[in-house]
Length: 129
Image (cartoon, rainbow, N blue to C red):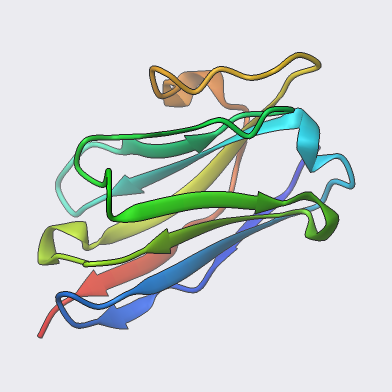
């Protein structure tokens, strides 16, 4: 059973940056496709970025493209989400989720949350002046 733990959330001013981490319990992170989701108050959870297993191909939702960057360090069993040029509408609880695959994963289109069996508990990001 893969365990995921998000960290790095907090309060940041508009235009600022924040880096999130998703620490995992596996030594074989390379075999997992990892997706970042977020859920704002009163809104549905949305997928925002993905990094595929084996090839580390990335994909982003239009709402964050050009501002957010997803990466992975398999040696540290951790996936990262660097968020720049943050806006108030980025305020949400951010989750990482994962699925195992023996073949290169697919990130486009962004995986539906129902496809992902492993989830973290979330970390809160607030963007406000």
